[in-house]
Image 1 (spheres, rainbow, N blue to C red):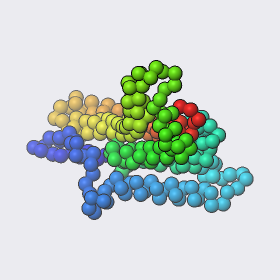
Image 2 (cartoon, one colour; image 1 turned 90 degrees about the horizontal axis):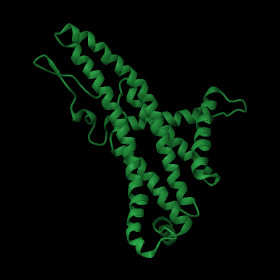
Image 3 (tube, rainbow, N blue to C red; image 1 turned 135 degrees about the vertical axis):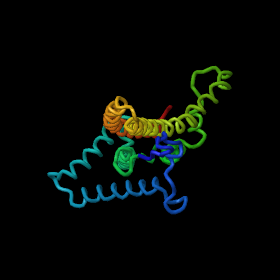
Image 4 (cartoon, rainbow, N blue to C red; image 1 turned 90 degrees about the vertical axis):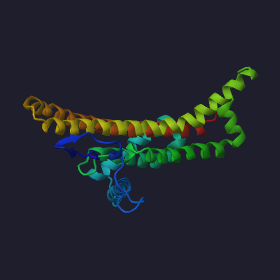
Amino acid sequence: MSGQLIAAEGLPWPPRVEDFYPPDLAGPWVTKFTLMIWLAVGLLIIFFMATYRNPKLVPSKGQWMAESLYGLVRDNIVREQMGNAGIRFAPYFTVLFAFIALTNLFGIVPGLQISPNSHIAFPIVLTAITYVMYLYIGVRKHGLGRYLKQNLIIPGVPWPMHFLLIPIEFLQNFINRPVTLAVRLFANMFAGHLILLVFTVGGFVMLASDNVFIQVTSVFSFLMAILMAFFEVLVALLQAYVFVTLSANYVGSSLAAEH
């Protein structure tokens, strides 16, 4: 947990906003967050290389896990959102799902105990990749003029209404989509970390009290911290699923003949 108990006159103080920004380890380019990102990348590379180093007809447990993960993303996300034309993107979205899920789960790993996605910069980078794919694929498939027309012009609408609808469609398709995609992931992971921080630090604060009743009550705060840690696992996986599903939906809309 990034929060720290700071003693002042024998009393612990609550965590500060700065606790969500771990100190630099070796200059501004090497922080706890960057090391966690490289750790996640290394673990995923090792996992996929180890499971597919010697694939067998009857899969091992590792190969079964990797194939199940790929099958989940391919059949339940990519095919549902993009159709068969999007199957070629399944490997990318599988890695994206695994990466987000793993970095989200870092929030409950002892010693790490914060997800890089609770820092807005990392969801922005992940969203930027999806956004570039979304624009590039649409322009490549339809051409710039036709792509803009499909996204901005609603057919069958009286032409004076376009003065109102075109700005709305532009905000919806080119501004709101990437903003909400990044903020949704960031806000959920930030809130989850904050809740765990509150119950954990709150337990220590009550435990340090001179009142015996308050000290006993601290047990409930610690129990809530444990309960919320299990809940955070569900949120971490769900947010990875939601992020990848929306990304596939946006990219799939660029592949569609009409919007």
